Amino acid sequence: MINLARDDIISSPIMSFSDILHRYLLSPLLSVSSQTTTTLSSNNKSRKPISSSVFSYLNDFDIDPTTGFMPNKPLPNRLPKLFKPWEEALASAPFLLSLGDDNDDEALAKRESSRLWRLKLVNGPILPIDSLLDDVPCLQRAHHVLAFLVHFYMHSIPLNGSSEPLVVPASLAVPLVAVSDRLGIAPILTFADTVLWNWTLKDSSKPLSADNIEPQTLFTQSDDERNFYNCCASIELRGVEALRIILDYDNMSSSFTGDSDFTLYSDPDEETHTIQRISEALARLARVVDELTEILQSVRSTCDPHAFYFRIRPWFRGSDANGPDSPGWVFEGVDPSRQLELSGPSAGQSSTMHALDVFLDVDHQLAKPRLPAPSEQNRRADHTFMTRMRKYMPGKHQEFLLYLASHHRPVRDLASRTHPLRQPYDSVVLALKRFRDQHMRIACLYVVSMSRSAAATIRGGCPVGAMMMEQMQQQQQQRESDHVAIFQRQPVRGTGGNELSCLLKASRDATVRTLLSGNIN
Ligand code: HEM
Figure 1 (tube, rainbow, N blue to C red):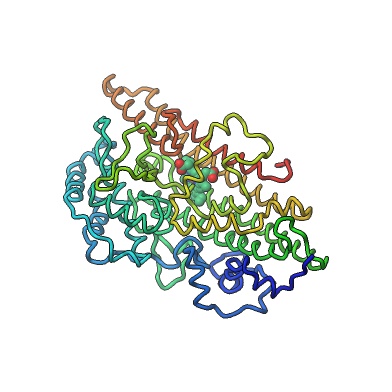
Figure 2: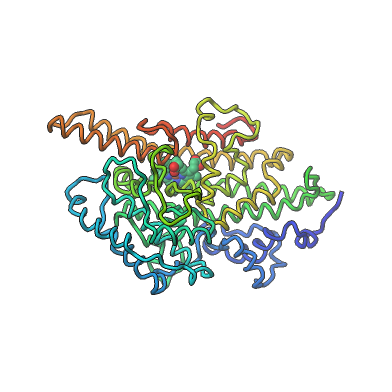
């Protein structure tokens, strides 16, 4: 048995990333956290000054020590002059456009301005993006602008019942694909565009915090939309603490010698101390996850479900919103043999949530023999959902998740072999289960109930003539099936959210199967 001294561990190559993060970056920079600002390491005495090479390592994953997956300062609020046509189109879109399937008077009044806005883009030049290639914040801004433009463009087109694919004009499609390729992200509106890269400081003299940011681009200019993005951003910012604990675990678990069997220290005191530290870190992580649940819950008082479902969410729909057999979208000027990822944005693309799943080893794909066995409904759900959602994250964040999966010593394995860690580990899993339970309630309120209420209104009858009723019914059914389809990315249509529940329950149940003790009370 080898007994590694602390300094040996620090210089061990396998620990380089987490150790660098922890020792040089995370510990000194805990100010963004509102609560758990205790240093997670016992190595403070040996803290060293930050070196530029450390920053470049961290930059490799585009993670900031204080803001995690969010940039630590707002993106430029305009692209360079060359890209004025994009910026102008974006600035005017919310005022000139309305949803193409919205037939209320206000929306109808905007049909002509919508048409002219789209025409300008169809006739617009394909701007070269070469000057942006080495400027990441500008590339991110370009993705944000182009992706919002694509969704403004596509969803302002009035429905005409055609079975032809809808065309994204080359002036948007070509640069969006080029920018996306460079960033390693899907060429469509993503969680990054609506949350990570969509904020500015309310008061630039104050530091970045959940209370001091506001979204830059909105489809509806409504507080509901603003608050929806803010809720997601608050979870990302609070999630930095979770990320810290995860990376710190990586550091602490290195104290266990032996790569595969977690042989413990030869010094029993040191071993007990390390187990104690890991146990405390897990207890803190459970509390942070509970805080994320509280933040999620807060959306109920700030974002109206009706506004979310009928006014905001329709803008999010991607090319597959009507199911994989629908004509979808064609990107003009882009090699047609390319398989583009074109689903819309979802908080299922949050790298913070994925990092928790990776750390705890939640098996969404049902690849591991765990109990209780998946139900029939669990097996029917889309097991590829979470894996697919990774493609909608910036490439460097995808790489980070791969790194996390491959480099850290799995906490679940360690806890299963180390009795005092079983309960603390399970407490984190249970906290994540509580998050997913709450999330299911929210999705039910904001999506399933709304789609049913739409159907019920129709069934309840409306004292206008039968023809009008039929028209309304068709329109609502179309909306209902569109909305359900984007959330589940499944061919099932018009089922009032049943398949959506299936997906979210499968995700919650996969979390439950992660528990080391079967007892979930
Ligand atoms: C009004 C608020 C929200 C609603 C209505 C909502 C709804 C949904 C729906 C319908 C899905 C199914 C997949 C899809 O997007 O197509 C989903 C997935 C997901 N959402 Fe949310 N969501 C909300 C807020 C959030 C927030 C703030 C987070 C955390 C950042 C979050 C995290 C997730 C995750 C991780 C998934 C993947 C499935 C899972 O892990 O259970 N959601 N959400």
